[in-house]
Image 1: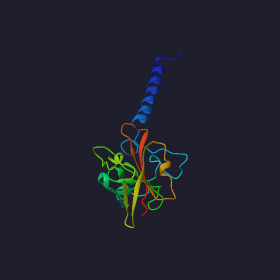
Image 2: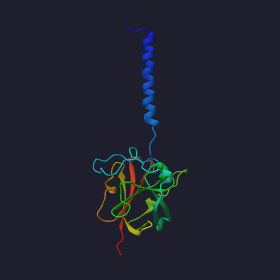
Image 3: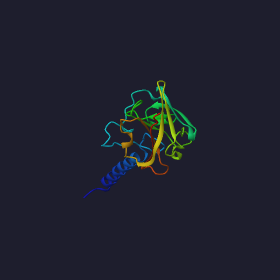
Image 4: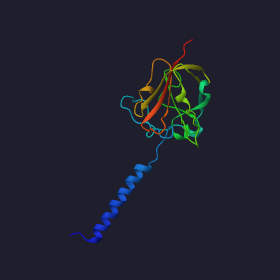
Length: 191
């Protein structure tokens, strides 16, 4: 019914299709936070972009410094740039573009390990309730008190939602558990 040549050509085509599919599945490029973090769409949080679909509106290498984060208890002082692409967070703490820069909830991300990147958030897992986080810009300085240090699913972005009070949310990955993220959230320290 079918010739040997037809069967061989069909087998070759199917093999190539399977190879391309597996190659794209395994080796597809991804924007990364904390070595393995990928932001995923969350139907409950429409105003937070995903990294894979995020439009970068400024040249990442030319992005200006937005401010600094200082966490005295873990000896952290790092500059913050706009965006959470790997080009940004390989060298800086990245600011989630759809979170506040001033009032409300300020969302930040950084690596916590890696040999070729700045692992600014490597010790945020050591933070405890009551520790202080300082956020400085050219216009103001705000102090926050850590309220939560929790592990969340990678798809749980409710901690980046806007708030009526001033808070700061730090996100990084959990080592060897790509489906989870470490989330540290601080509330503004009122004098």
